[in-house]
Length: 70
Image 1 (cartoon, one colour):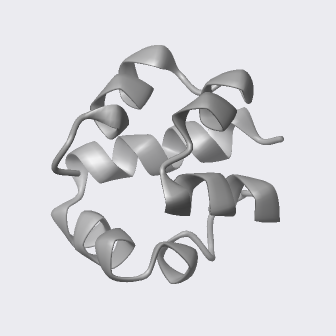
Image 2: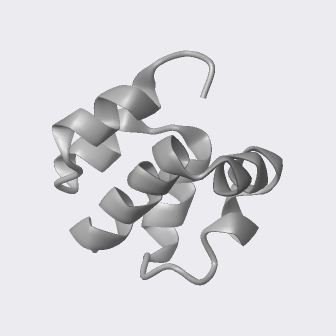
């Protein structure tokens, strides 16, 4: 699994409003160009915090992803 790819998505969700809007609309399409596996894309799309944490996602970035309203 690609820890960098996961962290990159989580970072963009916090810092890039256009990426956030695209992710909310279609997570699979929004993350297509990023270095992620199919399983990582699916975990991000369904908000699977446990899988992302076990994959090595940065805890600070993951905390923001886990908050309601993202």
